[in-house]
Length: 147
Image 1 (spheres, helix red, strand yellow):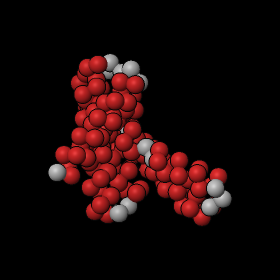
Image 2 (cartoon, helix red, strand yellow):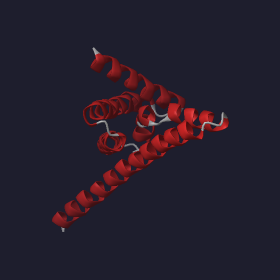
Image 3 (cartoon, helix red, strand yellow):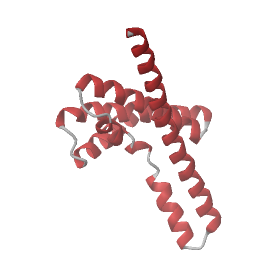
Image 4 (cartoon, rainbow, N blue to C red):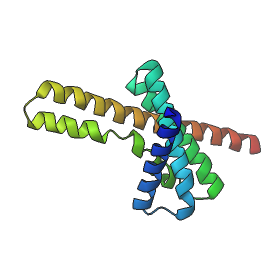
């Protein structure tokens, strides 16, 4: 039951952000699916290893790989797929709580929440960079085989 609920809500949030961002209609299902797969990976890795960095990194890496796959399959830019797909991973709530704690003068809680936000952001960027690196290596090998 948890799997279906987590998958459905992350699918809806990714697809809804795709509607707000005005991506092409034929990319909504795939961006929703990509976001849901990324969230499921994040959710289960977070429960298994209790590591924010590892779970965000792996989820962003898979989102990047799926975005590359769907962009080549549907002949669309990759950004159309991975921007809405990253929405479930973005730490909006902890960012708000960090700013709120700093404004209210509770710097210990604010620092803790800020560290969570920074760790999450760095992990997401690292996962996307690793995806780009792997894609470049694969493309180089494919070109080398053709020549």
